[in-house]
Length: 503
Image (tube, rainbow, N blue to C red; front, side, top):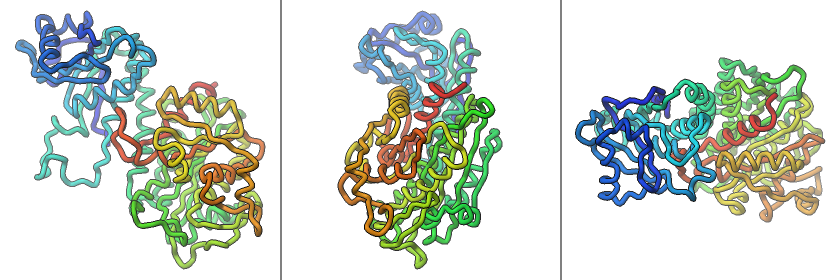
């Protein structure tokens, strides 16, 4: 976890301890501020670059002992690249590179970036990247990596560290960075939830994490099994009935917009562990199914981020929390269940369970809140991995404007989406001989038929389904994430709200 990583702000001065971080372009020239602070020692940059064959390429780093006359421990030099790298420069990634370079030590960054327009918001974005890269999920490790005796050297502990950002007017950046801090906390919360083992994070415990958002001013309601049965969420309860752990639905409301404005609705699949039920999965990699609640984790993290920065929008987050187990009470292939909408579903495969959870949530959200739009997130299908790999989430929508806005937010944050088709021909694949529909359309177009299933529970509301099976867990390492659980979707949807829906 990154709770021991600190970021401070100060006016420029030569630090008396720790690392000193400076940035250079591919010409290796220091800016005026860094040159003034280093004084005669400024020449060490060119000398070190020659020795290390360092050319200032973007995101490249060298670390050299401090020159004579400087009290710091090391000089860390970070490359910004050349003219070709200026367009669409990724400041969040730069923060991640710097956090990795200091490896949990104490360091001072001279916030001078030759050739780049380093305004307040961009330096604040750098702090976001640094916080995200500093994250570690190691609460269950009794020994640190490289330390067989379990002893801890705070200075070398990658989990901790302190970064002081030195610039002429630190207060403005400090204020902007505070907004990013809440966003980072939301991403980290989502990562923590996805990384947590299922034996400690069941539906009840997950709901408790949602309830903890009340301290930020979020209104939270937890629906237990008795209440869910009374409401009529039979599809959701059908998934849960094979587990000893009772189902929960958590409803989180942030009322930061104008009174009476329709809320934005974000819904998440929260299958805390998915064995597949009676249609049991193969044993290989089944341990990864602790992450089958990444959609719900994103929604909780998003609600934290919005509340922490006091977003000027009315937002409702809903998560359906169940465990899918093959008990004697579990639903069977061939069973027919009536959903909250009144539509009936023939269960073909009990491992196609997440769509049953979301079906009832979609119906409830529309009836209770009449939202301006709905976005649901789910690690729904392995088929989306076949189609898109791990670089993009699959996006399905009935609304072109909403889909385009999410795609734009994805480009801005690096949490990319790719729009996939919907259509009547695909919809026919889930028609059932015995019920209104069946819960899977077979092997072909599996991600699409899953989306078609969900669309049957959407009435007239603009809607987007994000299939995050390839991006929310076991995704590739990046400059800002080395965690198995990525926290995907929090930054994406926070950006969507900020860009288009705040009053």
